[in-house]
Image (tube, rainbow, N blue to C red):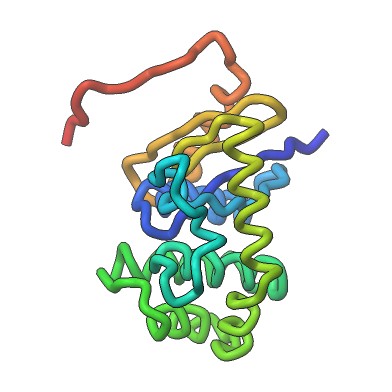
Length: 194
């Protein structure tokens, strides 16, 4: 039976890039796991309970992280065959090229993988994309108590993981072996040997 796992992402997080790149690489190499890529807004998670949710803020006031997530959702929903390339290109704009998520940077990312940037921008500005972000983020918090990215979710289990190297399939496979080991709650190094 194929495992079904969700992985959260926010394009501003380098650890989300590392973990999501590992998933993409593993899937391209033939890993038999059904992965769902789930947007999770770091902007939203850092708001006070009384603040207006990021999806209810006027479009011109939304932070760049939210705009980037909406581009990723638009591609995932409307152009799934190009999602992996666009997903990694959006991460790369920030973490490989050091760019801020201005509109043109997002457009350039999707154009670099052969997508029409005008079409993706229009889809990203739709109420549908915003509703998907709100629903998937809210579900992650309410159902699994997700607090950050990347978090891997399988059934009722959710695990926040920080891979130190980008895109390593062997790191992902080791983590997948541990995901169902529910007696381990926390394993955190006090310092990272480098």
